Image (cartoon, rainbow over all chains, first blue to last red):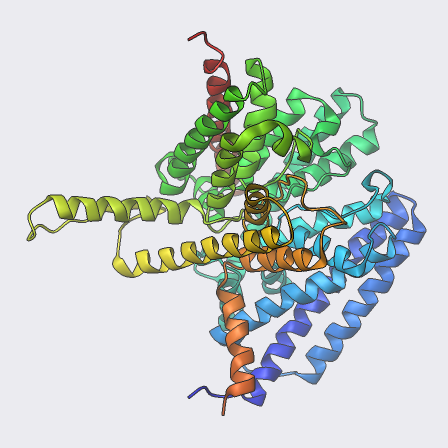
Amino acid sequence: MILKPQANDIKNIGYYLGRIILGLGLTMFLPFIAGLILFKEPNPAFDFLISANICIGIGLVLSRLCKTDKDLHAGPAMVVIALSWLAAMALSAIPLFFSSHYKSFLDACFETMSGFTTTGLTLVQDLDHLSKTHNLWRHLGPFLGGQGIAIIAISFLVGGASGSLNLYLGEGRDEKLVPNVIHTARFIWVISIVYLVLGTIVLGLVGLSIGLRSQSAFFHAACIFMAGFDTAGFAPQSPNILYYHSLLFEIVTIFFMVIGSFNFNLHYQVWTGNFKEVWKNIETRTLLLITMLVTLITMAGLKQGGVCSGGMILFRKGFFQIVSGQTTTGYMTIYAQQFIKEWGDLALTGIIIAMGLGGCACSTAGGVKMLRVGIIYKAFRQDIKSTMLSPNAVVTQRFHHIKTTFVEDKQVRAVLLVTLGYCVLYGLGTLVGVASGYPFLESLFESTSAAGNVGLSCGITDTGMPAVLKVTYIVEMWAGRLELMSVFALIGFLAAFVKGR
Amino acid sequence: MNKATILYHITLGIMWEAAYAIVIIGIGLLFAYALQLPR
């Protein structure tokens, strides 16, 4: 028998949702102030004032109406997370829709979901003439969503250790950097802000060296860094990274994409003196091996097709896309159509594998994640060894991730379930793509890109694509970012609400 | 831990992470140029 959620549960969900929406509203003052003072764009700035007021209004009403002292349990916390991402998508789309650069409100919602989930697929029209204020908001989305909407709430707005922990876990992160979840959330901000300052300075200097004006160079640097480190792939100009035509800019971007795909726990370990963790960790080792494998596949495909002649061209046009796909960033140094018209099936398959497997767990990257790939490999090894040896032999496998752990059946089951979930998600998006009239490989590419929160596009993502496909990709981005569990919790909650007694 | 030690660890930590990223970039360059070698 399914139990109907009680009034207290609903109040609790409403209260925490209200606090998160309130937090979102407060972040909108950043583009408002920047637009008014820095960019001298009063009209776009006021779009944010209006939207911030709407968010703050809704947030205050919800948190006042549902005010409760009860701590948030694991189930309702997952529902809060699932709902807060949907609310963030809809409310953040308001100022973007006001910009008139989006064909419909659905397109603006697609853009914000893509930003918050650090995907990077875009439906903006005439990006090159979008105001800096709106552009800043596009890039702030990945920076806020990459760290996690719950992380903002935990850091500044929500009290209660148990509730905070449940919110943190609900966002697809199961590793705490330090025992206290509030300190964990704050340390994630420290890492991001230190790298933001460093990245903006380095990319800004590179921008100056290639001829950008100072304000423009540092604006571009901040935007590219926020979307690069947070593995989103948005850029302030429509040709994406191709706009800069600079090898140095591309190398620095690769550098930040790789570091951005690292586990926050790994950052913490390395930053607190455990330097060798970079080379010992199962995730970084798997990432290195998978990158080598997909580089071999993709480059062989490119070479076979005679697409890129010359080592440097292969590096800039091929390897850049591989790292971008592997780290689930989605930055491009080629045009979307080139994937289909020039790359060939083998090279595309290499990129699809990279996108599907993704970056490290507990990072801003999407996809199945390197930790899971590593554990699956170890479990396979364990099974093969046990079939080869005597039936009485006890076979164990260890892996190093912060500490050395033995592979356990329970853990392998959880890993395989999430991996299967991702495969189903990739497959469902492909099915809708094929049903909408797109070829299979292109549909698989775009679906994997959406569900893996990558952002590379082979041209399907366009304002002209069917609305059903836009909604499918929005759902894929949302479910992929939350690693499915919070979405299942929301579905379960709704089912209990309707069918429960 | 005092501030200087924290700063020292962070700086060294960033350098170790940078070393990893440089290895990845090196792999890309190596593969790209290796594929150009005459068979």
